[in-house]
Length: 343
Image (cartoon, rainbow, N blue to C red; front, side, top):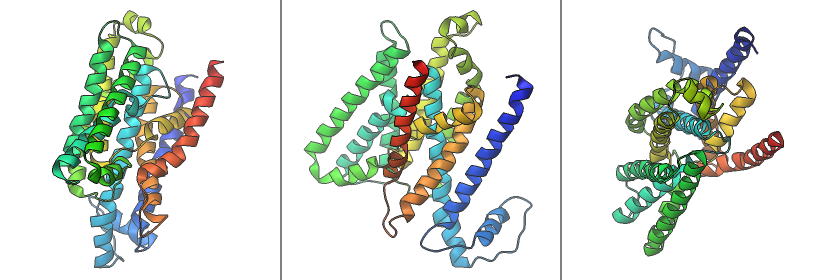
């Protein structure tokens, strides 16, 4: 398809992504124990934009619910979903495998171990320490996997196997720590299943710098990932260094995933399902897959969190349960479609 022929498809994909994210944000802002009028909610949100002044119909209490409780959760969910989807798409580009995400490279296992150690050491889930421990653990897990994978004869298969081995090792250590402190098992598993119930504007501002850096680094390598998808030899013939590209993209994706899991816990399948859906919509070029995965991932997680906090209200489901219920069948479908293409 020519560039001019691809342009309408690209514009359509971006249009769908923006509408999907906007609708998800609106649904997330309105849904809850206190019902908010849709038009009044939209007016209140638009009134916060520069140079926009609209008459307000929400009461002071409803505005407090919207801007201090629901909107921080919606924004944090969008950031986390976008980061996880971006990391998944980036890893899939590096390893040329649509079934790869951050959980296969030690990020999730490292975050789980870091959070577990922090909870056990402090005798509870401290809101300030656990995210930091999860962040450090996630980066450490990816670093260990990468160092193990580049020794000897480096390659994508070697890195994946190293990531799997490191993940299994860190999970084993986490299990041992839990067995030594069984009274903290419930708090640890609550964190592991993922939740945005404690979302605040402070958490949003804490992860924004890390997400900005990691997002910029990954998006700037979209063209390089397109070249890598053809093969390392072709990349070298064009003057690129595949090893350096993989290192930068893996590090940036690890930073994005670590920032996300630090504030949300472990949320699976976003990094696998969303990029695959984007490829079906917009094609395989990573210059499109990466930014569109961010937009669709943000909307997907906002909707998943809305389901998690409303379907059994006033209780909440762990958001990881909701994404697993959606992602597991989708993963099987992706696996079957991938096999059919290869055969």
